[in-house]
Length: 354
Image (cartoon, rainbow, N blue to C red):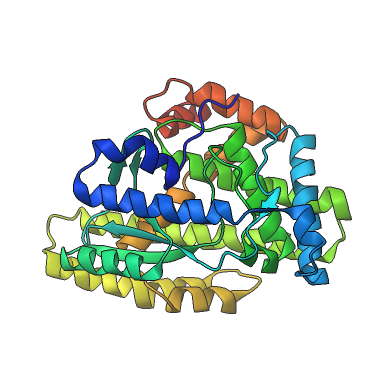
């Protein structure tokens, strides 16, 4: 079922594309390749690290969880991979992603690379490099959003290690991440980062809830918290989709000049978004009030949100069509999108024709 696995950044890009790129991109690719090689060089077999005495009981429990989630993924038909069989326990870096967008239109800046195509963000292994790009993009007039990435995937080119920070995550987040990556390994639709991330987000969340229910029972406290968190996520995503639509319509209004658009944009991102959160039905409203009042809120952040959260209702409709069978769902997504110029249009057409 898997069509093709592609590396997001790093060593594969560096070795396959460096001769084809202009100077600035050559530097980026070589530096990414160096740090990725460093990460991979620090990999140690999980069993060796277990026996080394460097991990506490809670961290050892997280390793058990990762192994069990991988086993569960195989049980439900997701493609087995060699990822997360090693751990780079001594790796101390953080991964940073940088994205940019026009300040008065949802027109993201993209970067093109040989082999893998176009991406709406760049990844860095050093914060100072990410901040340098942030400043350059801001000087060029872009909205810029810098965020950290908790996990790292080469999408099958290398055996990806567990990162040390992952051992501090809660069980649902860890299961979600592992199953998200297994979803990528099972199906990758060429040419659309947004589609692949939205699809894998959907599979990872659905499968993580099922994992907790199957392994621990429907009354497990962790499961109940995860269900509530998923419900809150759905409410929050709906709010952000609504905000995106309002912003997009405003940007398309030819009766407003850029100054008026920027003023209305500021109002929507501050007062209006907070008001909508306070009026919504959350289990944990303070969490989302904090989310919308801290950090950077701009067009670049909204584009990143759309990259990972698009058309969840269409994926849900296809899952319902196959009676909740996740493996059949992935097969149907493969059938629907195969050879399509735009996988989202193909998905919309399929669901609309039912």
